[in-house]
Amino acid sequence: MLLLWREAPCLPTMRIDGKVVLITGASEGIGAACAAEFAASGAKLSLTARNAEKLRAAAPAGAFTVTGDLTNEAGRREIVGRTLDRYGAIDILINNAGAGTYEPSWEMPLEDARYLMELNFFAPLALTQLVVPGMRLRKDGMIVNVGSIGGKVTLPWMTVYSATKYALGSLTEGQRMELRRDGIRTMIVCPGYVRTRFQQNVLRGATPDKVRDARRYAITAEACARSIRHGVEREARTVVAPRAAWLLVIAMRLFPSLVEARMAEMNGTA
Ligand SMILES: NC(=O)c1ccc[n+]([C@@H]2O[C@H](COP(=O)([O-])OP(=O)(O)OC[C@H]3O[C@@H](n4cnc5c(N)ncnc54)[C@H](OP(=O)(O)O)[C@@H]3O)[C@@H](O)[C@H]2O)c1
Image (cartoon, rainbow, N blue to C red; front, side):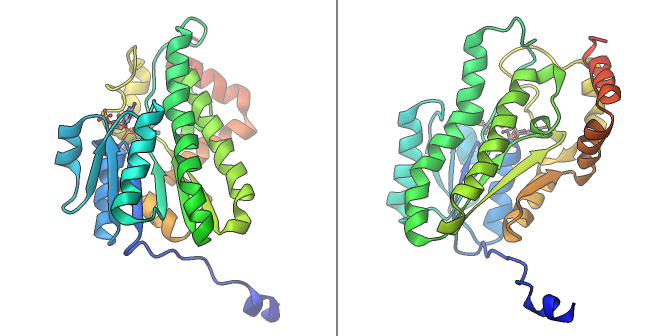
């Protein structure tokens, strides 16, 4: 037993100090809080979002910013290309930009569903494809995908959003195994309720009343960013923030009918 203990590998720890960190969706909310958190840990930041004014206002001193839309290929190539021109490498990619919609899946325009999939799934995949070649050459790197607790337990008020986050979670797991030999780690972040403007920034629709009431349990964007930074440092596979949200995941596995009934009631469809 003692021998096993002594032979056990040390717990991984990644230093953020001096690392180049590219964060998407950094003009507000969790992305802006991550920018502050990683800047405080000594990272060299490259930040992106569509709104130039908000992005500049949120960026910590010394951060490099590139304005662009991640739902088109030109925007994605520009942020990666200009970051590489500026710093020569990208060590950590944080795919945080995302959006939701409160439209019932059975009647929403497919155009909206495609847009969400483009932003929440294809943009992280495309950015990963752009940064991985450099990471493979250096045999080092980390891809952080900001999913959602809705990517572990489907939220009926955001069914298609949940589907995009399930897809992102599966991508993160698969890439961890694909890129293992190349020294590249991947991490999925599953925030529960975080106090940001996410609910106002949705494509369409309004938050069901009972879901809005749950806002009193929400954590701050800063607390979420701290969990993400800590997860990167310990090279975690999954970060659930707050950790209490794991209880919902476990409850759904053990008592699916009960949890589904309660969620339908929150959605106003029970
Ligand atoms: N808040 C929550 O309760 C919660 C819970 C679970 C998961 N999440 C996830 O956490 C991530 C961040 O959410 P948040 O709460 O911080 O949301 P937020 O406050 O609405 O911020 C979203 C960010 O994404 C950027 N963005 C949106 N569309 C974009 C586009 N087409 N191209 C480039 N950037 C775009 C926005 O900037 P511009 O408008 O300037 O482009 C903004 O900086 C998302 O992936 C979300 O799904 C949030």
